[in-house]
Structure formats: C-alpha cells, structure tokens
Image 1: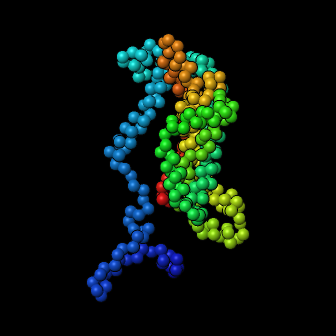
Image 2: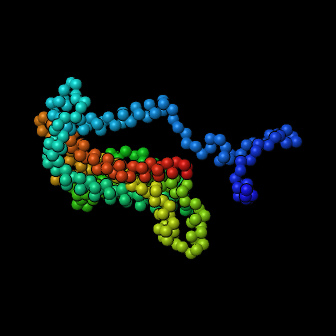
Image 3: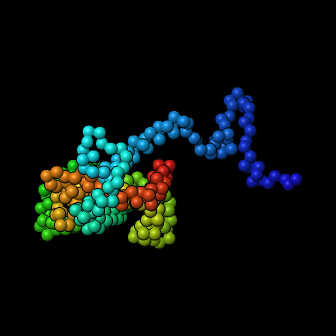
Length: 310
C-alpha cells in the first residue's frame, strides 16, 4: 500500500470538529466534497411540464405561419382557421419571392444588418472599455447621459434625420439606414458591464508595465477578453436591425428595399392574399432561424458566462 502523499491528504474532506473551549462549534467549510456539492440540480415533473408548455406556446406562432403559408387565402380567412399544413407551400413561397422581389431585399438586409451589427460591436466595445477601465473626469456623468439617450423615442429624431439624409443625397440608399445606427447606448452599457467583470485591472496594468500603449492594449488585451460579449451583441443587433421596419420604410424606396419594407408589396391590392403574405413572412424569418441554429448554443453559453461572472 502506498503512503498517502501531501496532495491527497490535503484533498480529504476535513472532519467536523467539536466545540472549542468557549463552546463555539466551528462552521463547516464549503468543501467541494460536501455531499451534493458540484452536482447539477434536476427539475421535477412540474418544471419539465411548465418548460414544455412554454416551448409549445413560443413555437406555435412559427408553426401557424407555416400552416397559413401552405394553404389558401380563403382557408386562412375562415372563422375556424386550419391547424394542419396544406399542400400549397412551395407555390406560395414562389409567389411571395417573385411578387416582393425578395432576392434583392434579402441581400440589402444582409448588408444593412451586418454593417450595423459589426459597427455597433466595435464602437460599443471601445466606449464600454473607456467607461469600465479608464479614469477620466465626468466619467459617471457621461455614462448617465449615454444611458439616458436610450430612453428617447426614435420617432422624435425622424424629421431632422430625414433632412440630413436628404441633404447628403442618401435618400433611397442603404447608407441612410446604416449611418444613424452605427452604435447604440444599450450596446455601450452592455459592453461596459461585461468588461467591468471579464477584464481584470491587473491585466491592463501588466501590459502597461511591459510598455504597451493604449492602442496596443485595446487590440491585444481588451479585444480578446471582450470577444464573447461582442459576439452576443453582434447577433442581438443583427436580429434587431433585420426586423427594423420604421426607419427603413421612411428613407428607402420600393426599388431598393430591405426585407421588411419589401413585405409591404405583398399587402397591396384590393384583396391581399393572406397565405402569400405569410409565406413572405416565413421567407423573411428563415435567415434569422438559420443564424440562431448555428450560433444559438454560443449565444446562450456566453450569456450564461456573463451572468456567472456578474
């Protein structure tokens, strides 16, 4: 039999000692070998039932969109709408793609959403790093001003923004949608909170001791630490920009639309075809579903990581 080493002895759970001379019993330490420690908690049948019910309620709108897109407009408008898919899905998808010119609209939406999401992730990280780790006068006041701008309704800035875009000659062009949304106050606050927890001050101080300047610290120290938060912010901003309708509808034309603006074409006419409209909505949602299927686990993992660090 081999003699226990120092390491194995130190890992043995300590026995609970009795009370000392004053009659005070020592508190049990939070050892990882305590019964139940480190085990994942499992929900009971009620928890699984509630989660299943919530999943069904959440997925039902998507399911009924598929059902409505696969039937006729008369069936959708009946008092008792159908609950099972029909056989006209392919023809309705083709009609929606052709009538709304969705090929160009999907490309425009990818350009707009990708540009807005990338710029928001970069600029929000720059500002979030400054508010989280740099020391300068009026830092707290400036952060409050930035957060307060998120409470201003975007409708209040429509007229001056429209005049600016028109004077720049951007009416009807994609820069008119991209430029006003290059960064968001919510994104700055999100990255500020993330970097305050995920980036140790000692790491920045060590880089300064090694002679790194501000630019080198940001690119080689801050960005690697901020990458999970930036990915989450990128994906959230991409989805938000893809679904945005109001401002693109104001500054874009029907000849150069995004997906949400192109959907308006399907609703025109004396009697719009509801099944074709639902087919267009399904086509406009498919890129977001694919994005979530590819990056969904990473989004949830990074959000959970941020919650644990907080």
